[in-house]
Length: 170
Ligand SMILES: [Zn+2]
Image 1: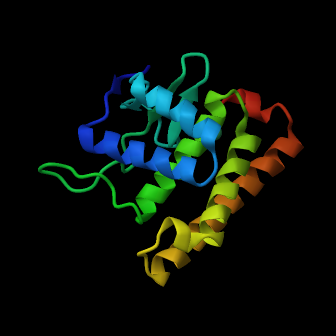
Image 2: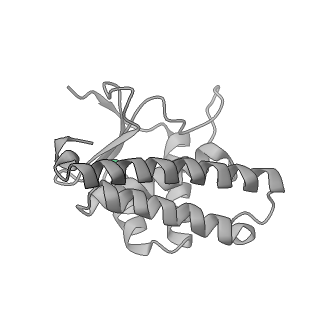
């Protein structure tokens, strides 16, 4: 079952800016695929997505759905786009890059690999992307990257153990 709802204007702004970051970090083709999906109204929120899933992509339909618990804006009355140097924003950009890989028909191993490279790029050239950000956020990004890296290794190990695992679903 899928009940999708459209993004709010603030959420749309967050997604749009996150796509800009994906592009600036060097993933031009994937940013373009995401930009098209957003323009076509194919990036939405799925109210019925299981809690274990953060986002889901259907490469045939060209859709990317987020779990409602993924922060896409901040505050209320009215909600505002995410701060560009917040953990939520950077995670959103990394998640979009991961989903863009699926949009282009690639599997989890590649998608997690891209996510890793993205965090590495941000860590390596932090000042370029976040010229006004203090050292604390930089440390946080290092921390998330390690988490993502652990997740990637876990998935890769499972895949090596059982090559059919990936086909059983996301
Ligand atoms: Zn995935």
